[in-house]
Length: 415
Image (cartoon, rainbow, N blue to C red; front, side):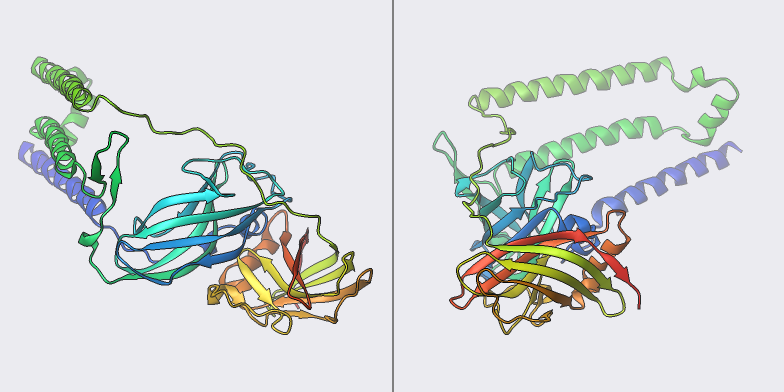
């Protein structure tokens, strides 16, 4: 009976170790992101990204890519998401395939979290350095404390012309020393990982050298739990604890003497981000009603539009949740915006003749494209607060643009 219990305990331990190894060393590759699974209201009513520009679509290892543009912090920020008082401008990529060298908001370097004002529009720029060859989906992203990552538009960028091992990341420290962060102290890091792994395995081996599960369970059930830990076990445990403390103290002392000048990681929140100076929109838009027709994958808006400007305008674009619906007769995109997020003829207006200064007109606007389903924007109709939001872009004959925002309840239609 004892032999059987020992074998059961032995193979149980082997199974656990194999399971641990499988989860530790298997890492499935990821190419794109889960932006489609993010709640539609999050993408519609938080951060609106526009005028985006990816400087390159193909780069070599060690080359730089810039992503720039503007983002608007929506006035109708949802109550269920914490306001962006602590936000971090980020880039969504499948692992460290790029490194972020610089980030700017309003021309100011932002290496850490910032405070953003609701209702304001900011310019941004992020500089990336290509690290790992492959085709990668690169997104704009804003991390908000209490709100999580808010993902913006993504574009495929190809890193080619080199090997992963060719990547270099040299920096000059404040003491004048130049080091390559990609390989700096690599051997020392490997040593301590191996050392503590061996230390931990030794601890596990000591306790697993005897039957582990069933015999110990039976002793505990029999009221003999005190017999599970012997005097020798207690001494070994104290030795391991003392050894751990001594090793940590000695290694910390050695590191402090070798590197006497250190600066802690900077974790404060930067305030005073300068938004763009924007004049009040000269186009007043009132949403009379809005419906989403489920069978047709189309949203219809009844809008009353008043032109308070000095030149006639036409509606050329409706933007929501990174998807752009265009009226190609008014505006054509030439920026290389991701094709899957661009409905070039997805916007129709019942009367899109030029709206003269001082004129008010009620029109029906339809935004239709498969993107409503592909990007799961239609899920907004199942939300407890079923509201849509976005930006309307009006253009005059000279190409000048006026932006107005819309925010209203959305009623589903199943016929």
